[in-house]
Length: 263
DNA sequence: ATGGTCGGTTGCCGA
Image 1 (cartoon, protein in one colour):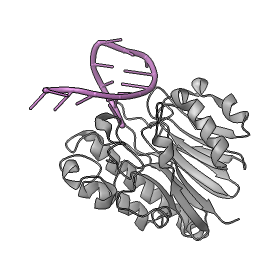
Image 2 (cartoon, rainbow, N blue to C red):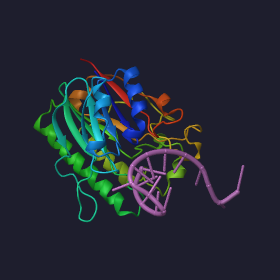
Image 3 (cartoon, rainbow, N blue to C red):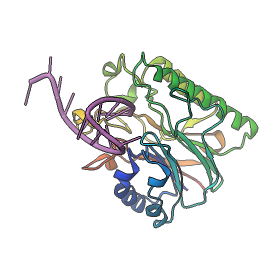
């Protein structure tokens, strides 16, 4: 079974690209982030025409997460227990949706950006990841054989090799010790990055800023990850980052990340 | 050359 995660940066503006990509890549499950659409705006029909069922959670023009599957989509969950809110009053954003696809509990996650080191959004990001780690630890404790995939845009580059320039990110979000520690909390809860062993760095990225010709200059970041529970990680037989999809007019600023598990 | 780019409830904010 082939599973992928992709921050599409608006499903409505990217639907032609997503459709073409699904047709040529043969993935069974796609976790999507930043749909930037309400439920009534999501192009469910375009996915149905390709044989994919979709569970989507979108509240407004921001965030938005979905799971498209052609191997079943059961027990859909919107958000996870303990997921922190944002705003005044604080409310849960559309950043997490889960579903069981052929026995695998798939989560599509859009971790808060953080915005700046001195911005309250950074504390929100850290709390969000700690809550996810706590929830994930509980899921594995309840069932050590659980097949769980935490997929998405984590907005953190865990290692120095994951950014084109360590110096550039000094004083910015995504590489700070606090953010890296928060990412590690999820790893420590039992979830392993199953892509890195198959797509090692340095110079291996999943995101390139639209500005400054970052893609053309190969100046990116690895911030999109597939973290799997032990039982699922044991089944992974391959993985790749589809850098080709970042090319050309109309591309998302993120590339799809794909991994394959043995049946 | 003090800039450059996308997206959407666009003339501003979030990424």
